[in-house]
Length: 333
Ligand code: ZN
Image 1 (cartoon, rainbow, N blue to C red):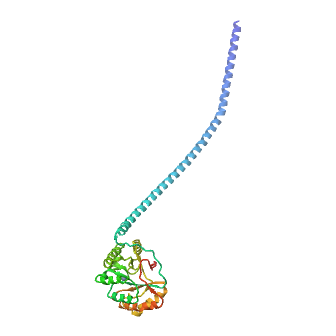
Image 2: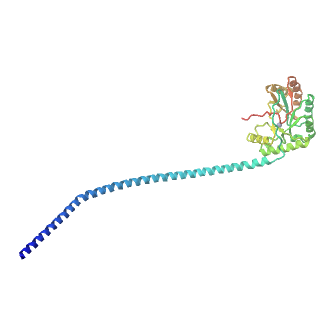
Image 3: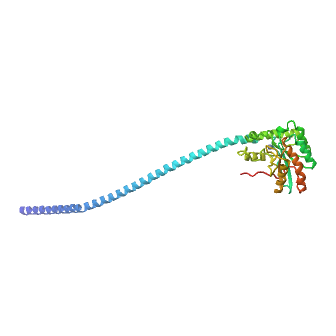
């Protein structure tokens, strides 16, 4: 019995050992399996992680490059913006300076001399073969003789007078108006340097002259002739502004298309003056003839006495200017 029990106990132990051995064997197999699977798995994971990290690094580098480029672009845009703002500020400053330089003068002379305005007339083209005799620089010691010659042929003419010459000859100027001739303005002082010094200087001179003519004759002149013509060596930088201002004030100015050439230092002969006019007139449909009413030009009076009957005989007729006559004006280079 005891022996049976011992045997049974021994069998039981053997079974347990076997089970234990089997268990150990299974664990060993699992460990071996794990040892076989894990390294490649870890390797694969490591490789995967490595590739992923490399891509991340590349993406980061690319993003960094893009960001630096954008930063550079922004910097350049900001620099351009600052440059543009500076240019704009410079332009504004220049504009302000220009306005400051122009405005006061324009405003000053435009609002000055309120009496120096006339009503502009619509201009009418003269009929063919009309001759307008115009006498600059008077009145003079020769004016009375000249008026008598004009009356002799019943011819009306135009006198562009000088204020300084009117002083002491007021009666002569009255006579010019009374005999139906037109009185236009030429200059108060006839001092080129003085009147062409500025627009204001010119207006001041003309304001005085206009007032003087009105005081003597009761008539307000509406036409004028620039001393030296509308474009001359003294008013080159000023003539456009001067013309614009005088036109704005309603005045009409007349240059000429025929010159009697009687203003030379040495007096021309009667024949030379008369010939200059008679040979010039046929070149134009209508003529505005420049002559001078000066104490130095006695020959002019005699030449007028000669040329009027000549031109009348050749079919020309004479008129005096008024501001409705379409002006002859010099063209600008
Ligand atoms: Zn003159």
